[in-house]
Length: 155
Image (cartoon, rainbow, N blue to C red; front, side, top):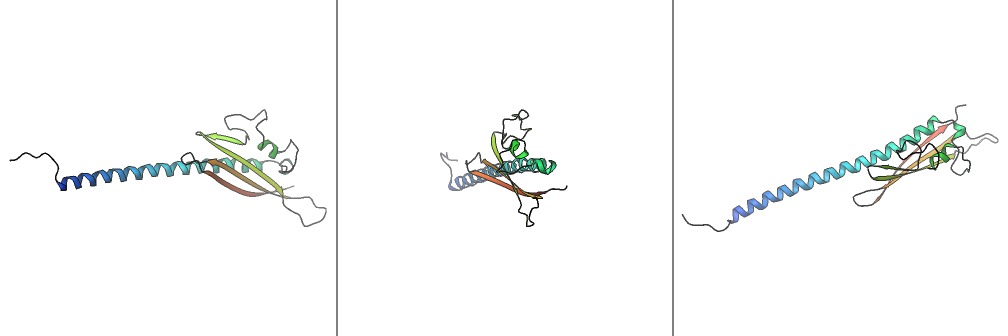
């Protein structure tokens, strides 16, 4: 028997192949976790938009207001202000910026009257647009989720 002080070419190729496989598996797992986190962020945005839409649908039509009004007694004014006595940091009220898991989601709501083609007839339909914006924590890219619906005056 003679003394070996190094690796053969085949041993080196096998070791390199095994290390490559370990890195590829680790990279795949890392990308999977990143993808799951991005999906969760979108789920949070969808939930915040759905909360706003459900609150708007539950309100009386005359209390919704429209985005260009300056009245403070409308639901749109409540959504766009964090100064009400019932607003809280826990996100239970209609504050415009909601923090979830360290990410700030900004909610913007736009309500407009749909035009009526009959003279002297009040609007009976409103278009509601909800926009949620946030920044992806991994690459700091701004992301947007938008939802739209209509609300009719049932009275």
